[in-house]
Length: 71
View 1 (cartoon, one colour):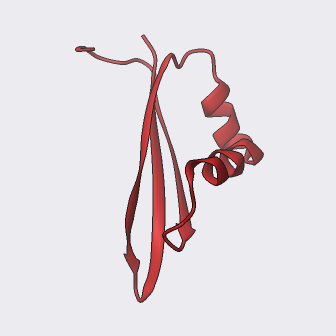
View 2: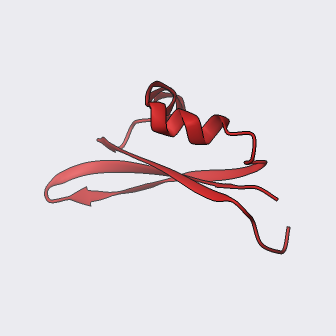
View 3: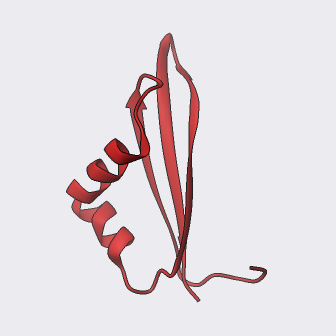
């Protein structure tokens, strides 16, 4: 889809290690009132997310990001 989204939103999560999957991440977002509010808000009709893997200091981390958009 080409064009602008309005409103827009974003939820982010970081987990130690490289194994946390999408299920653990979504459950953590669902337990957080502010993340849950965004994920369930009726204005958002589109969403896309993905993980990124890297290090913070010497520790391995997985960061999940989901972008939300409405039209």
